[in-house]
Image (cartoon, rainbow, N blue to C red; front, side, top):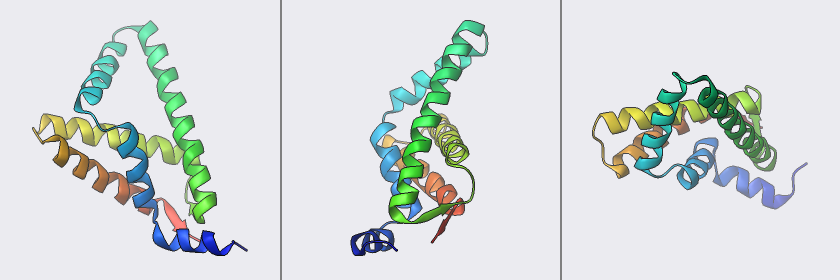
Length: 130
């Protein structure tokens, strides 16, 4: 059984809220999205850069996956897919939505709102509360 404080946290926060908080911390800047997209585009033409980019991306998935696994244990969520796969899907959704928002001319605030909405929706679909 969980301690009383864990029960309270589980009721107060859902998977979407937790993921929004995680992504808001690390991925808040339009310039970061532009830089990442530029590096990815160049990596498609340069095998050495591609290897570095893929290693960086796998590292991100691993770190975010570990964080997601910890959140699931702490807040009593059951993941419908392995934590690393969950992280990859969330990061890919974040990246694709961010690029779409920039190409659409959305403000940073509107971009964050759209990214948060889509990643939260995906996170909610990938999690069952225990």
